[in-house]
Image (cartoon, rainbow, N blue to C red; front, side, top):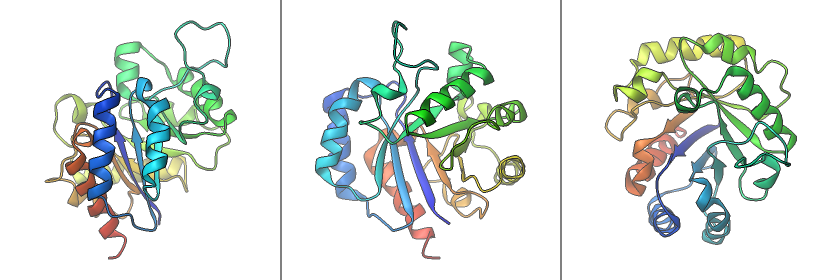
Length: 233
């Protein structure tokens, strides 16, 4: 089974800091066949980083946008349409709980962003949490994408900085897989180098969705190398 590690920088790092991070990460990360690493910088870094990362030639590494407009190109002040970033990224994070919490986005907003993302030829990383998992998953039924990645991230694990119990992650992943079979599911929520091993070992999971720990290149490289090593076991 292919594995993924997604790093979500959220609203952190300017251009210089981002380039320094990738330079350090490239020196520490050991690419492994079957593992794809996806990093989501801020929008202000995407244009320069797409060229910088390409020059580094890090195997099996892709960039992602942290969000996208639910509308196409046009008269939508402040919005970034999927078509505008299609040459900079391969993936788009959609429906993160922080978008719903702070920006009041709905499951329909997620579905609209999904449609725009897929129409632009980009791959969606759709965030799922409890207790809204069913409505979030139902909104995806009409979206035709063979490369959708689902990211399970309990709100409590992100806000209280306490990771979800491994057994509950396994149960949630099984539920998601019943609604959307054959879709890879990654887990995110207060993951660190110290606690990641037990999640990596879950056979139901296809990888990790990392927030705070992805800001440190060494910590993130260590997590990626741990997941890569699990492919050999």
